[in-house]
Length: 142
Image (cartoon, rainbow, N blue to C red; front, side, top):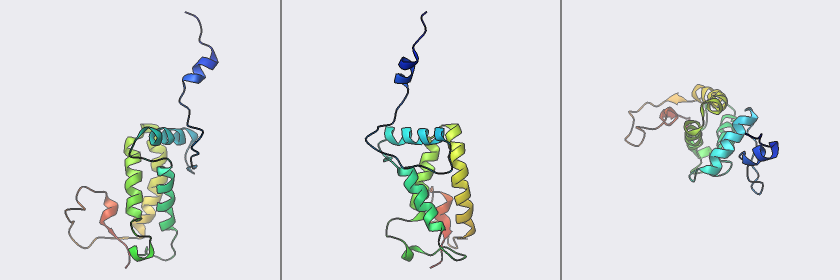
């Protein structure tokens, strides 16, 4: 059987679309960035740069000064840290094992900070909160 030429092998590899630039996700390996980009381009419900935007939004909320995070009045309506964390949870669920672990380390660091700066909810879970992530059951300062 003849040997395949390197050019033919490279042509079969997945290549990102050049007409749509992607934001860089800091703190993860290049293979993880490729896996995230491939996931975002292949899934209809994830838009391009969804993961980078969610990480940036989640981290920006954690850059607030003070011991506790401000409540929803200090944020743009409809753009809550919980929504960003939902996007990250979906990406982590869909990624293969190695990229999931790499991105998971970055998200875990942010989760620990979010948990440290919020309080557990003092009320029983509502019907809407059941089945959602733990981050929906945390309370920010009002």
